[in-house]
Length: 292
Image (cartoon, rainbow, N blue to C red; front, side, top):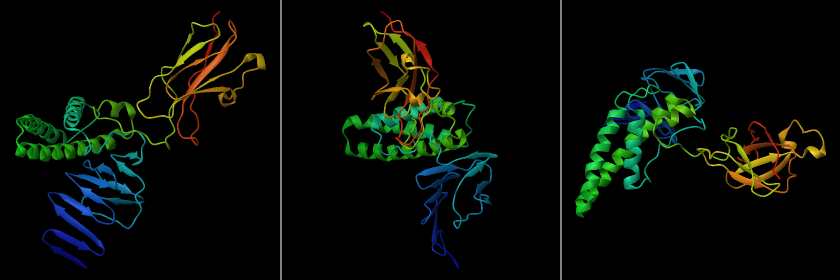
């Protein structure tokens, strides 16, 4: 039985509320905002295409809440909604100046960016950022109404950033390079994520005989530190599996290995440390001898 009351649509136990192009499904937490859809804490944007959920296809006029959402196919490209690489889509806790900086960076990164296509999301963000900047400047007068007006426009700016962020995540499909080019801050990957091989792995001879200074680039996501591995060739042939080498653990991204034999070649490798259950992804091996 369907009933339409004051722009509310009740279907069975699901309640659809239509307010300014927004449709909310109580049990499934789905919302459309300017052709965007929010599922739980993840927002997936519709871009003039159908969405495939499980084995069923939904167009813009059809919804089905009876099947489990697994993957979405947008423009024939399969995107896992749990993709580890993504930009932040929640800005409610940003400070007054931080959210303005974030919006400015996003606008700069996405304007004329060929990796992304928008309808009105980007222009809406520009307008919201301009309005908020004006209201933020008026707060200095100390007027209470100015503070209220600033807070209202800050919430609007946060919403526009969220909408743009969701569209960026959808279109990038987890592509780290595209996400980095968006100007939006990247979300921190949880401990369940298997990290890639370190970048910038480098070794220099220490000032003390037998010491080797090692470093890797700091990744854009949080890790539990870095594992530096080496093998003593005096113990026999180097194992092909680096996991069988000697490990030294750093809580950061650099370490000095001490006590090595000068003028003796050692193989070295590095890996970012993720969750204990995640496999280590090793860098290329570097062979080097400590100095005298």
